[in-house]
Image (cartoon, rainbow, N blue to C red; front, side):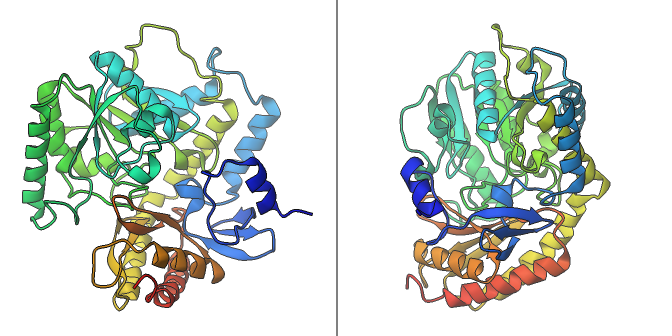
Length: 431
């Protein structure tokens, strides 16, 4: 009988990546742990790509899903939908955007695609600014604005796109500057770029770049960008698919680290709000959200079951103050990881905020990427019972660490100890 891996290769496209030389089938989970088909238990430090935000098999969410499924699973946006309205009310209030409207989708890709549709329709322009090293999804429009070659399989796009500098603090032409000079230089770059373009619809930016390796600019940079954009009437879209819901610890939304100039015009979200269910969406100012002059619906966005999951998950998140837990346990974890990496010569940087931490790996003594070391750490961590992710862009290699926000201090210590051994085991890879 063929293995599940063989069957996967026979029917799934080659470009659908799998982790590990011997891929694992995850069969169930509880709390911060998951189990594979062979009965091995793993501490989950990646949460299904930052999606199992609260905990695996969270009783409050599974109960809400089961009860709603017992009533009705689907109706579409053509009918009034109480769970959708209730969750939209909560998100509109939490967004910080005045007179907000919310449209639900099934993924972060679709959320960003919708935000691009709204921005270009509202502004009457198909010109988009995006950040270098960015990632915004896998649809035709979002691939076209993704500033990460490894995740952009085509240069064709319905949009005209230009890339802005500033999403990566410790690389590039401004890396040697102080934070203040870095922001000034990036703003000057933006101003110069706008002098070479036609009317621009929007700038889309991740407050912390996810796939790019959990990189970020100094606090306040997007506020400085926002002031420039406002002078030109250009919209700011904050892609909060990975940074939203308190994951960064210090803030509920990533944009709030750059909030001196006010909230974004549009905010996209997904991943964690459904705790594994397919929920995404856009929240923005009513005049922008209402600008479409043709009918539009969503067949599956805002489904009663996924909205019930989102409501239960958000309630649990807030009632248990998981944002504060992300801040507290995240600080402990990043301290432990920095100590663990201190004598590993292939570690260039340990960075992050809250429970969103990246470890950049290079060939020892250089700034060149070290994919061999990243693969070795990934394999060694799995062998020792820990699941993590990978990322990076523009000739970089990074490990991505993003556990559920209910992670305990003891679990953080456990994961850090495994990573310390995995890093040491991989220190000579790619030398």
